[in-house]
Length: 302
Image (cartoon, rainbow, N blue to C red):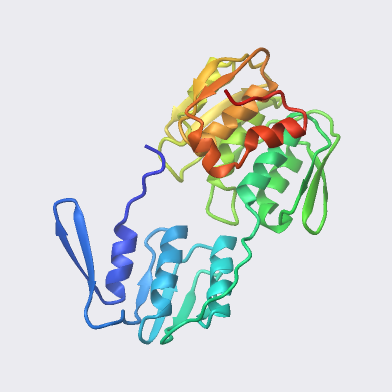
């Protein structure tokens, strides 16, 4: 099921900082000899955002220096490091593949301003293009969305980019565009489902390749039920032939990102679309029905 994550990277990382692991059945105990972890070196065998964040946090109060390599580059990593440094941590290199943390004895409290949600902003960006709407997305960071913006412009979309805003502008026909998802700053796997909906309305054939998570593309069965022309090559690749008209159906949200994609699909489909299991959508898109109504989408919560 999408959403489950292996914990091996976390456990290996904690071990590199001196933690001891014991397992009893399904319970894993992590213990520290003495009062503190010890600085160490760790190479991430695969890039992990939450793994990078967890080891940064663990290393802040560890004794000595920690060096982390093959780290995730996501903006959230840099934001975390900035906040911890403002509290007295000594972190260098966040936002690059190599991060160095010099452990400190204690940190103080602090104040944090959460950075804009780039996935939510990207979802609204796709929505604006999908509807050929002049839609203004504010309080975002366009620099975090360069891969998506570049891909949408290649497909024919047009934008006006501000310091903290992106405006969707009128454009002509939407052209098919193939994508391969990748860790930041590549095309985010979390924005792939909305983009796949967009591909159903583009002229020509688009190859969507998402190697990040197994099962990420299984939601496209719901789009096929709505009338999309999609061929699944394997669990990580689909071919979308467009444009096709979509028709409303009764569907269930399989996960947070696929769920919002079905909302977008329903917004352009003929007839009524009913989506169950929406608690997952609410996790990532606060009051999404209210905000979509405010920009003209005919949607209600039942």
